[in-house]
Length: 172
Image 1 (spheres, one colour):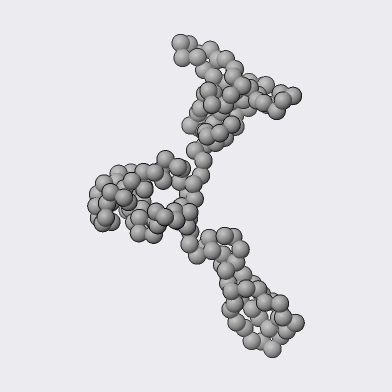
Image 2: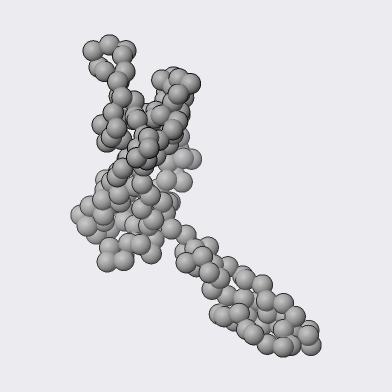
C-alpha cells in the first residue's frame, strides 16, 4: 500500500490534471505523487494481544460511549484525551472482517543478551538468569532466554562476548 494513489501531472502546454495512474504521455513535463494509500488511511500499529483486547471491546460494546467507559487511559488529562481520540477513531473505523485495513500487527519486541557470533550451525547462545542468585547460564533457545524490557537492563548482563539485541518474542 505504499504505491501512490494519485498523481499531479504537468504538461508542456502548462495544463495540469490529477490522475490515479502515472500517465505515459509525450507531452508530460512532470508527474508527482500526491499521496499513498498509507497516508490516506493511517494504520494503527499494535501487538496481537492489543488487537485481541480491542476486538473484544468492539464486540461487547455497541456504542462508542460504552467502549470509552470500559477502557482505561493513562497519563495527564491531555494524554488521556489524545488516547481517547485515537481509540474513538480506531473503534469507529475498525471492520472486524477486514482489520488489516486499519491495524498493522507488529511483533512484541523484547531485549535479549546473546553471543555476538552464531555457531557454525547459525545458532546463537542466549542468556538465562538463575532466580536463586545472580548467576547466569546459556541456552540455545531464545524461547527460554531472559527477556528485558529496556536496552539498559539487558546491557547490565553483557560481557565482551555477548551483545544486547532487540528481537520479536514470538518465533525463533
